[in-house]
Image: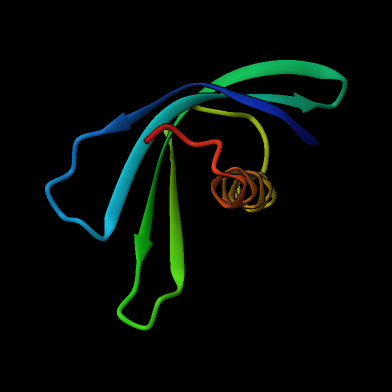
Length: 87
């Protein structure tokens, strides 16, 4: 299972300044088959400065969720560190 890309990323308007909410479509290769799945995620900065990423899959998927969410978090945190998420 690999995350190929996250496309159609849109930042949602959230009135809380330390929380950023996004939605997008993750392109994932699972068992040699490519699937698009809609996801929502939130990046929240805690009072001590660390960031917590919460992911919600809006599509049903026939694959174990823990490895998928772990890989999505790594990809989203990488995109955030590189400044590639929408402002």
